Image 1: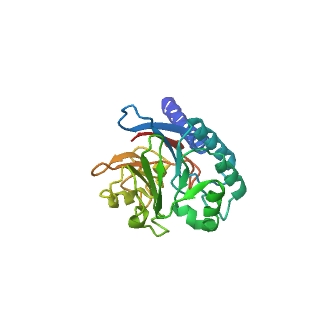
Image 2 (image 1 turned 90 degrees about the vertical axis):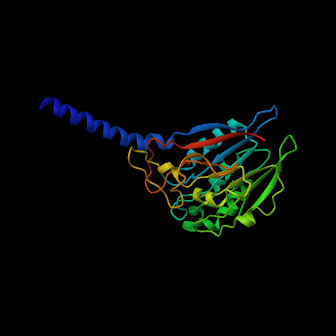
Length: 270
């Protein structure tokens, strides 16, 4: 009887510890993942940083955003890409001036680019999202793209789809201005990738899934349009690679477990 009581006490304390960690510790951790794509033949890589799903809210205030800015700038990226969902619910918590000031401090000599996420349309955020990005030096790609020249004189075409849940995404329009050696396409929802495999796109960057936020064995929580492609790298048909960023913030519940907030850094050899 005594051994059984000790077992249940240890189990109870372990559960309490995991809950404490999931709500108070892991959501404030920021993990940087570094990847190399392409063949290094002596050329200088283009360093691309992807941010996604920040979900600014009372449980994830602008002080946490400042930590993100510091970590990103330490990487000295050439390009910064944001794949959507800046605020969780702008109507309930939307410190626009503070967020704009923080995003303005992100530096990338070849540009900062973003796309719409579904939360950027909801909660009244659609009225301020473009203005915040523009004031912070980001170019909002809404079914459009821009050709960027790297140090070796090669063009990278950075394209962005409108949100596929609440917006009006158009692949044809997003790729219409392409004149490049390498294409990066931003799509907030990753399951759109199946429609892109025959479009000569080398890298698709998405978010939306949060990696489920809570990663417990035998339990996977998936978002609509992030059901097939959920986390990390996927090699699609042809030469197309998809990367699903698990995001920085939280939604629905302010907890993460075994899915820490992520900054993804790619060294691209083109």
